[in-house]
Length: 224
Image 1 (cartoon, one colour):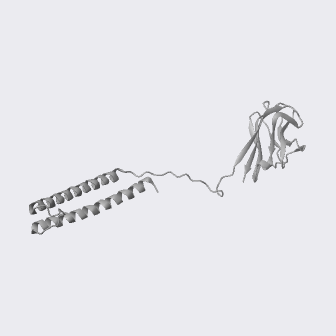
Image 2: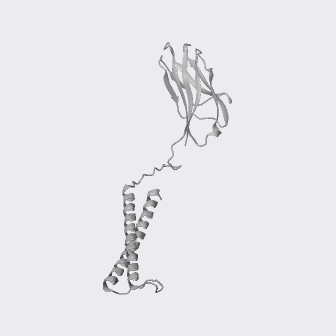
Image 3: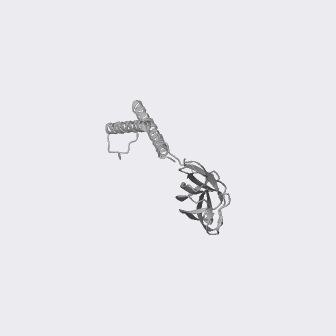
């Protein structure tokens, strides 16, 4: 329940109570005035020590006091109305938390650095490797090898792939190729990581032994 709702309820209760008191006091005042006009006797607890005139004056005093009390009730009601008029309800912000069934797949990127080679056969590129433990990733949806390649002289074709140094075999379907001097991102999708902790090394080669450069490389792991 908001603060505005609680305040409204308390204010309404106060109005009802004050209206009830106002009605009761007005009814009592009218009754006393009617009796005065008719000359009827009104019982006032004075232990029989007051004269009839003093009794009448006491009744008038009680009636006046009642009228003043009623006036005070009206003032309270008017004040409550002003408060309610000036109160502006505020909106409460709620943060929506997606359920597990609608949450998006998580992606992890393992950087592999950069490097170059002129070799015509598969060669390990220094600094372009990373150790990945596949058991640290639950429910793997897909693994992708991404590498940005270029040949400054635009001679030959550059090839790149991942190699499992731990088990000494290429990562199946990770091989990509590129031509030209402009750095181009190449991607091998749906490769498979071997179970457990393995060292993955980037290997490259150029068919004409011209310098070939990998500006960046990474492995993207997408979870279900």
